[in-house]
Amino acid sequence: MGLFISARAYALHQEKEKLYVELKLILARLPGPEAAEQLQIYRHTLREKTKQLKVLSSELNMYESQSQEYKYEIEKLTNELLDLKKKYLTQKRKEHIQKNKDRISMDNTFPMAKPTGPRFTGGGFPLNKSSKVKS
Image (tube, rainbow, N blue to C red; front, side, top):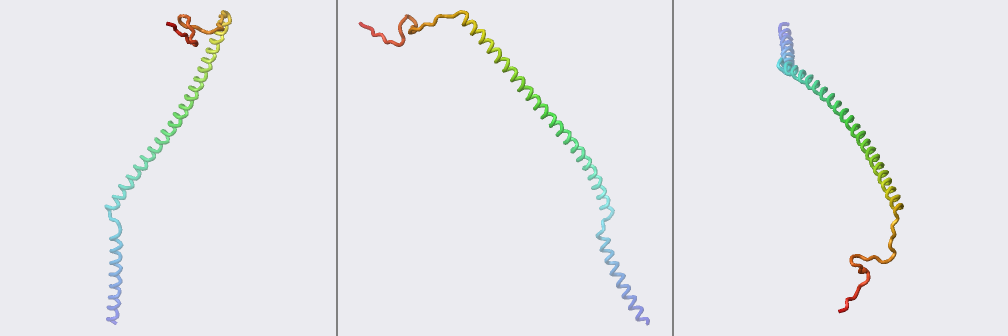
């Protein structure tokens, strides 16, 4: 019976040693305290970067809304400029028409006789007829 107990104790001892080796391997794979500290640093850095991202995102939204406001303002000013140009050109056209009406009425007030014959320039020589010079 003593041999049976020692064989059984040996098998039990072998089983315990096998479990000890497996547990040692598992513990070797687990991170140590420096890994936990590094993980804590990464978490802190991630929180800071997330805050920065939120700030930048809100700034981007603000700038986009400002850009839309500026585009609207430019469009509004462009339309106002076009209206002003139209009014200016209409006014100039009216002034030109009024000026021409005054000129026409003046032309009718002082009628001038228009020559019906050929026109002469300079010393009274006709421009369209060639004159032959006799020596």
